[in-house]
Image 1 (cartoon, rainbow, N blue to C red):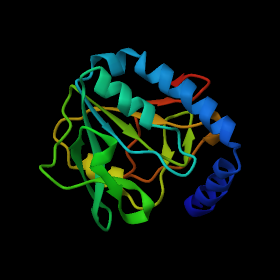
Image 2 (cartoon, one colour; image 1 turned 180 degrees about the horizontal axis):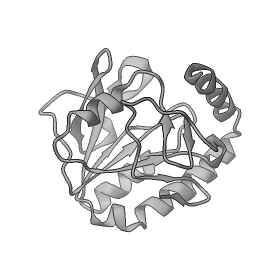
Image 3 (spheres, rainbow, N blue to C red; image 1 turned 135 degrees about the vertical axis):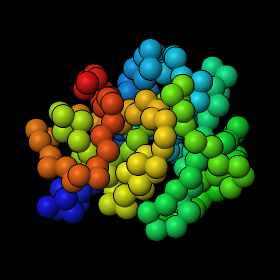
Image 4 (cartoon, helix red, strand yellow; image 1 turned 30 degrees about the vertical axis):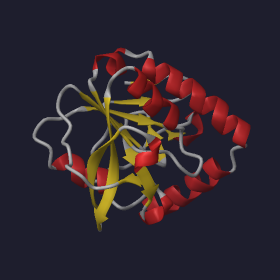
Length: 183
């Protein structure tokens, strides 16, 4: 069931027009960086968007302007990832899955003063999510002793009424779409 929903919503997202992706992504990014969740964090843990995802590059650039530390994930193996610091987009190279990733240095673990931005393919109004199927975020977050603030970014057309989560699925604290917040 998850695989069918994942494929359906990936196709739906890819069908969005470039201008629609840009405009909605800009609205979402604007709402995020003006939120108290973003304003209060000192460290931003964030994926680098690709393939019609909500654009995170503007959010990352804003974090640097706001003197926040920025960390992005690197795939380390099957279902495993770590976050590494970056100070420029030039610190990134194309890694597995065609995703921009940092060079491994010293990995960092988010703390309570951190904001972690989660990707996903399908979400519901109870904040459940279906990711890309690798379990990277669920495994990573399950190991943390201190939980950062978790926010998932998506377009409103990625929302459904209800998903059936697995016991190991970790939901974000909030979901942000171009329409607003889901708490």
